[in-house]
Length: 375
View: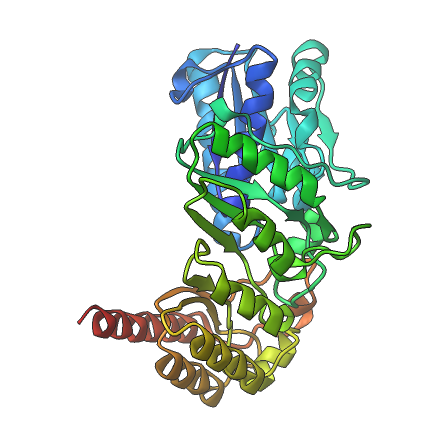
């Protein structure tokens, strides 16, 4: 049988899809890029913003039409990932053509879920969150043949008030370092030169492991592996970065001099409402320490505008902070209410037009910074 998989969202979703593809290939399935040739359609979903969910439902509508047009009564449609975990039974109601949903803790069961869906011809909902399971992509299922993502932890404990991730990916679990190092050595043996370590908050790596190890220790272990040329990682939470980690970044020459370091807002009031766990002055202090210790470091960030309660002066503080820091790269978004989060209970009091205007303003501001850095 042929399977077509479409992935929405972040690097972690793409990594999960690579792992699922590897499992399916091991079970004799063929992967096709052409969905017209497929018997099984998998949609790996993102739930961070409503726009991401809207795109999924749009695709499910297209698959319903395709199934009807091709008269494929034997075809299977499955939804997996964060949106599957969040919406569960709601997906079946809105998209009746979906045969199964698979949550974020059950990717390793995808081959048997597909088999059951085909044989039993009943709706399957597997969204329990009993245990985090780490599944690595096979060499043949990785899209890039020189750079690889490696998962070092899953889940998140931060509970930022706007973020759905802890609810759909579960609590933070660190992967044993020996498993990480073994996977990276296998990748290096296969010719990979670049490794990106993945986690919702890599700075808190090691908590809960029997072995006393933190993220800076892990970086040193990876750095020691011969023939690795470049080490990257995402994402770093400002509240958990330490002087030990800053020194490790400075001393380990293979580690990228780019750090994704989400600010989210330049207003202490909004940071507090977001439950980010740091103030602007604390954030700026870390930036100063990073740049003092690593003069050539490039900083990237995430910014959310239009968060509930954001006044013009709060937004101005974000703009001023962006001018002061001069980020090398910025991902900028309008606030999107997520049912189930703490912020969803707050009054969404910034109008859509004001959100749009503020987003356009910081996009243009970042463009000016980027042009300045190119000169």
